[in-house]
Every structure is written in structure tokens, then in C-alpha cells.
Length: 227
Image (cartoon, rainbow, N blue to C red):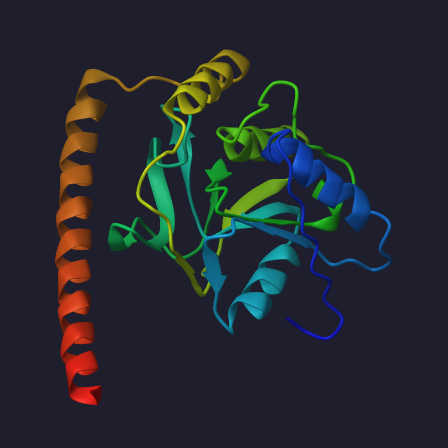
């Protein structure tokens, strides 16, 4: 963080959309706010992230910037996209999903950087999505419907997640809500597309696992050498 940055923290049992809306309301009262970065509490940002996010938010017509996302949804999550961009560094290891930077339909809610145009005019829908899941897809699609761009940029980050969706009932409920709200944006795969997707995902999973095991082995050797 730079000296002029402000850390806003929210908690509560009324859902992540309600908490994020309270953050946006506070940010709107701050003069010259260049962007609002919403991150989960298990995300660690590296030293280069601040500049990377600000550079991304300064792009023409930008509404939301994220670290990983997709375009051409066939499901309610960014990963359910026909083309994807960015990389993940999380419980499953390091995986690149596509180009480091690209315009997309949605980004992963682990990190949402909102431009002044977006956070001053668009709230999260706490009524439609009262729990934890689905808010990121919904917000990005709301931003795009308002005429703003959603973009993946290279971000220095690590996601220290537990590798699960958490509340599966809330996950399923959020997915159903998104399919109902955005039928024109979430279009099922055709038969040929399903075959191509399965092959692509198996290759990405193999690469991610291999790189993760290699990096874990190197770290183990380094730790032994330092003892």
C-alpha cells in the first residue's frame, strides 16, 4: 500500500454483496479515489500488484480488472468459459489459462478492482445473491451491460484457498440464479465444444499438477538446505 491508500474492512452475516456495497458507499465519499480493490481474506498481493492494478484501471472504458477470467460463458463461473485468460496460483498449484491480459466477460471474485465509473454507479445485487457465490459473475455482467470493459491483467498475487467451494447449497443456488438472470450470456456448449473443452481442461490440470509438484520439491530441498 502507498501512504495515500485506505484499507476498508467489512464483516457480517448478511452476505458478501451487502458487505461490498458498504465498502463502495464509503469509497464514494472519498475524493479522488482511483479505484476500489475487493479481495478475499485468503489472497496475498505482491509488491508489484498496486501498480499493475492501477495501470489496468486507467485503460479506456474500464469497469473491472481482475487476475483471471473468461469470455463466452457456458456456465455460471469464469472457469466455465470458451476462452480464458490469466493465471491461478492456489491450492491446486500454478496454472496458466490463456494470455496474461485480455478483455473478458467475467473475472474471478478472488480479486475485483473497480474503476471510479463502475463503483460510483453500480452496486452488487444483495437481494438476488444473498450468500457468497455468484456475485463476481453477476457484477461483471452488470458492468458490461452498462457499457464498460472487464479485463484480465497480470497481477502479482497468491490465493491461499482450501480448494473447495465451501457451502455447496449456496453455490448451487447462486448458479441457478445466474442462469436465470443471464440466459443470453450463459449459453450451453454444443457437442463438439464439449469434446474440445474436456481435452483442454485435462491438459491444463496435468500441467498445473506437474508444476505444483516440481515447485513443492524445490521448496522442500531449499528448506532442508537452510536448516
